Length: 306
Ligand SMILES: Cc1cc2nc3c(=O)[nH]c(=O)nc-3n(C[C@H](O)[C@H](O)[C@H](O)COP(=O)(O)OP(=O)(O)OC[C@H]3O[C@@H](n4cnc5c(N)ncnc54)[C@H](O)[C@@H]3O)c2cc1C
Image: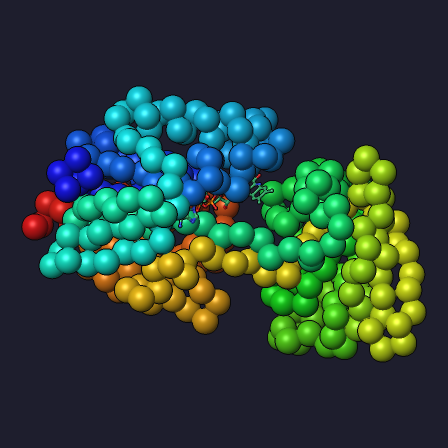
């Protein structure tokens, strides 16, 4: 077991996990980072990141590679294995992956979240070519253009109001006949004369050549179909946090996010959380890296009390 024993195991090598590994190594802790896919997380295929301070125009791949190299140079160990369970044996946490078991007194869960997709043909290949899941990240690329937002929850409404300030026109496509948001927010939507709400409708096809050119929308009540020309479509139909594997020990909210405040403590002693997979208001790179720093600092404090 000794070869597989570390001070801190970090699950996920996205921006949160990588930052946590940098902080934990700088505190001289033995660190293992487990990653199911490749380092970098959600940003790895993003062409332009414009809102990460000091890096005004950087690709996701370059930013992630810099973080990964920094963590490796500091001595973090990386294994590309998916964590499937955490078991506590009298304070020693065993993290089981699809291949092995690893042990540590502290664990940081930094598994991020995935965008819920529409499930339409070509959706994946149009990401970054007209399809986006993040208005705050990509809204700026659509200045004075025509965009759509799909969804009916708070995120869809906030995205629509945010985009309306930047773009020429926003179509908001909602599958029901009303919104659950408060009246003041709905009033704001209706007061904006560059927002058109299309109720009772779903997006049934993405229209494209090399980029998205529009969408086909079907009205659920009368089955009528129409095409709308668009430069961009923002999909805001929810996110899927990657926490289910740890739900036997960790408290999750009704949407599957780990319940934690800014200190990144979970309900379970010695298990911390960092990044998009915890309850929070803003899911962005800066908040993920901030969480990574906080979770590692708290994990080090926890180890020092043992
Ligand atoms: C297309 C796109 C563009 C974006 N652009 C921007 C932008 O311009 N600016 C900005 O601030 N934010 C942007 N974001 C949001 C930003 O990428 C996220 O907020 C950030 O990546 C969250 O980091 P994270 O480390 O918490 O999670 P993630 O980036 O989701 O990383 C989690 C990692 O954990 C791994 N993992 C999951 N489960 C397991 C498991 N069981 N075992 C091992 N590993 C596991 C995943 O493979 C992944 O690598 C964008 C997001 C997307 C999708």
